[in-house]
Every structure is written in C-alpha cells, then in structure tokens.
Image 1 (cartoon, rainbow over the protein chains, first blue to last red):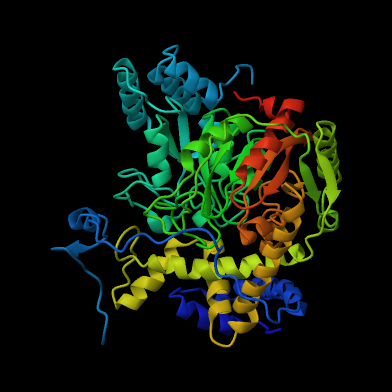
Image 2: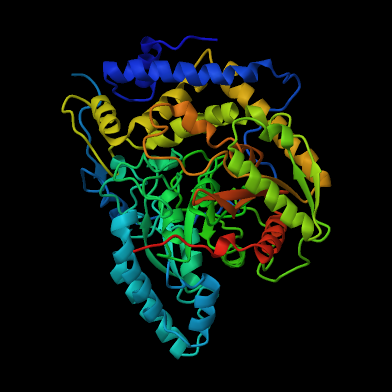
Length: 96
Length: 485
C-alpha cells in the first residue's frame, strides 16, 4: 500500500485548511501509515458486484418542500466573532 | 454508596403523585453534583438556575392539574454536543469556545416536554472522537469505580454522571460505540438506537451516516422509558424514520423462547479472560430463563474497524470543514488573508485526534485514493450489514461483550491511536450496519464493571428491552453502585 510521508500529510493538510508543525507532520505520517497498514486487510475481500453503502436504507423520508421560517438574522450574527450590519467581516480574500 | 439514588421511573412516579416536588428533587441532585463533581469532573457546565426555574414551572403545572409528562421532575444531563438555546455548546473543543446556540436539539425539547429537568452539559472527547474522554480539550472525566481509570468515551461525562448517581438519566451520542463503551466501563445501561430512530436536529455532526443519540440509565426500565419519550419522526431531520413508536415500558414475555446468536469466531481474539467469563455467565443466566443460545457467524466483522476509520473520518473531514472562525466560535486572526485565518483558527481550535482524523478522512477521499479506500470501505460496509441481516433473520438478538477489556488507566493508550481504536471492535460493526445495540452491566472484574452487548434487528429495540429486562430480573449487577464521597 501507499507509504504516507510527511509531504503527503502536508498536501492533505493544505486541502483540509490545517496548518501543521513539522513535528505534527512527522507524527501523523507515521500514525496514518500504521492505520492504513491495518486497513490493508480489507483489500483482500472480494467486493465485485457489491453495492457501496452510503447510508442505512429505510431510515428517513423527505418532508414536503415548503418554505418555513429560518433563524432570525440578528440572533445568528450575534455568534459571529466579527461582523457588522448583518455581514461577516473577514481578512482579505484575494490579492496581497 | 450508602444512600439509595432513585431511578428516573421512581422520581417521575413520585413527582406525578405529588409525593415529592420537582424542585426538591432538582435541589437534591444539584447538591449531589456539587459534592461529587470535584472528584469525577463529569460536567462542562452545570445549569443550576435554569434547572431550578424549570423545576418550579413543573411543580406549578402539577399544582394547576396539568399532565406534566412521563419524566416529570427527572434530572437529566446532556452530552455537550446537543444544543440548548442560550447554553454553551463546546463539543469538548476549543474551536467552539464562546458559542451559544440559537436553537434547541429536538431530543432536549422532547425530554423537557415530558417534564425532565436539564441540570447540565457533560464532558466528552473532542467532537466525539475518542474512547476515553482524554481527548476533551477541557479536562478528563474520571471513572466513578476507580478514579485512576477512564470512564470510556466519547460520552464519558454522561456515563460517569449516571454511574456516580448525579443524575438518573443522561444523553450521549454513539458513532462507533460512544454510548455503549462508556456504559460498559461505568457499569450502567447505554442504548444506541437504530439509525433513524432518533432526531439529530441540534446534534453536532461527526459522521452523519453513523451518528445516533441515545440514553444512559441504571436500569432497563429507565432506558425503555427514555426511549419511549425520545424516539420518533422529526421533520427537521430527514434521516429520522416515520415509524410508530411503541410504549417500551409495557412489560412482555421475558426471555422464554428468545433466540440469542453468539459470533464466537469473532470473539476469540484479544479479549480479557474475566470479560469472557462474565459474558459466558450472562448467556447461561439468559438460558436459564428460557432463551436459546446458538452460534452464528459474522464473517466480515473483523474488517469493521478498518471500514469504520475510513468511512467515519471521511465524513468527519467534510462535517468539520464548517469550523472556519467566520460564523461562530473561535477565530484566530493571522492578519494576512482569509486562508491563513482558516488555518490558524483550525490549528489552534482542534486537538491532535481531531486533526489526525481530518487528515486521514481528507486523504481517503482525495484524488487517487478514493477508490482504494473510501469506495472499498463502503462496499465492505454492505457486506457487514448483510452479515447482521442474515444472522438476525433467525435470531432475535446477537450477543457479544461490549468491550474486550474493562476500563483502562489514564495514558495507557494515548500514544497509540490504533490500540485505542481497537478497543471499539465489538461496538463499531453495529453502527456500520445501522442496527440498535445496548450495553447492560453483566459483572465485575477486580471491582471494575463489565458490559454485555445485545444487538437487534433494525427498529426492533423492543427485543433489546425484552432480553435486558429478563436479564436484570435474574441478576443484581445493575443494583451495585460505586462508593462516592
């Protein structure tokens, strides 16, 4: 199976918007390698023609698609670390 | 403990009969919490004022002749990943520091509508990721039977609160064993309902195809009462099932004729002798009550841990993308740009286990690895589900020990994530299949509790209560309590 390197971890961390220290990258690489080596046993199973299971069938039904009131905007905005006039304020998104 | 702590059923009966006021009961339990909490650390927030206000409202309603519900005056504790409007939800994480949800979880609404009194929010492994409560960003909860040992996890606070007699009923959530495993470690009853049985509106999501909310109690009778209140369709959760909810408290035929399947081949590896002994004795007790025990096979169950840590982490990596420091909770400003704010907020806000799982989940979903890991795990999940369907076509329940060992010591498994994951080997397959499972106290080894796990057909929790009730009539393990100060 694939060997997980600190570089792989760094690549994946960037996809997941996580900043990791070099030490964390090394530790996670080693631990992920252990976990994936353990998971390799799964590769020996014959899964030809087996449907992938994404959820437990039979559970749940959709409600009617009718609009209902959602949460009050001011109440929701009160939770924001930074915001004004019903908008979230964030650092620069583009450029710089 | 010297005093006899009443069950939820006892309290509700006495409060409804005006034998006892909800305010008295609540005050007594809050006193008990302030006495025991310094030793156990089960709570993240105690909502004493809110609880007393609610209790007085219940008493007023009773005085006015109203029916206040089946849990009248029953003090309950809520795992800190279920929202209560205006009360902090941390999910055991720094990333939600300061968050006060603007809405209330359906399960909490249902408990309160039935007259229950919420006394606080309980400690947990961060984002429900862990089996020991050592991953809480705030503090570890201690096991009431031995404070040098973990209470289990991730719902360790809720389990310890019930075991220590601080509340007769609490709520947890179970994604891979997070109700059943701490119930076993703390010597109480813990129910993971069928996927779809209980609304998850207001539950912080970890792995959405696996998460389910359920109760901790000391007796089966209380678990059946809680289930009768909690279960049922909620339009705010599309995965909740529109099925009739029976009154589970109505007793039934006992264990006579009950068919119990035991997957012996699956149980052979890495299990403590004392746990296996207690398990065999509990089967013998059920047999003496007329149950028939047969050997069954779950050939794919050995792949459950691998499957789980791919499916659950993939879903978690997606669910936890929302913690970005923009809309609620912690924000760490880096100054330069939004991307840096995301990275630093998440780096500071998440602990090591959460980062590890986000990385693993992102990896198994990433380009080039998806087919080999995620898609394959979903197929193996189908095979595991089929195993249970086949076995439960001829058996009423499947029985296993809940955990391979009793509660371990703090620090024993923290250095090796895989060793920690393997402690969930008997509970994880049940979440993958979607079936209901329960852990029931079934003995002790060196003073530490052991749990018996029973698993039933989907939406057939009634069989779990039937077997559990029969078992508790024959045994007294559930009547033992740890000695508290």
